[in-house]
Image (cartoon, rainbow, N blue to C red):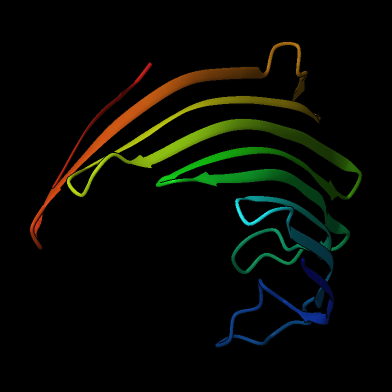
Amino acid sequence: TDISLNVSNLNTKGFSNAQSPLINTKEFEKDGFNQKSLGFNVNHQITNKWTILALVNYNINTSDLDGGAFTDVKDYQYDKTAYLINIGSRISFNKSLLRFNFSQNNVRNKFDNQGSITDNKGNISNAEALYTAEVNNYIGITSGFNYKLSRTNQTSDFGSLSSDTASNSIASIFTSLFFKGGKYFRLELGGRI
């Protein structure tokens, strides 16, 4: 069993993104940045042919922003929260490998520009199964299935979008044949529907 834990806390009291390095005629606000991050990963071999794994990443960013090049803006903040969860499994047998994977990624970006709020939330769900095999020394095959669902909710002074209308999904199956010969010849033929 392999386990890893990563924790970080990054802070800066800031500098002005807008201040020109050549012209320092006025005082610019210093824009700070803070990032807190946590990552956890576990990989466990149940048998010599079967492995399961899990991963969790979570981070929070907060930052002060300027109004663009050479334009200082006070009270303009940015907050971002994101997490990723991933679980998977690998099963090997003979010269073949079967993989299953599911991931969930959620992100929230919030901008507060002197009371004008933009709040964007999004998430992506992804599931896949993948089979690879070496048929012989000259031919290999990869086949699989993938499903992805993306959704977003967005609000601002200019309007809003909800996940009822701002979402999409895609599902596909695919297969590729790999041909190899000698040191230099490689050919792949495949398709996805």
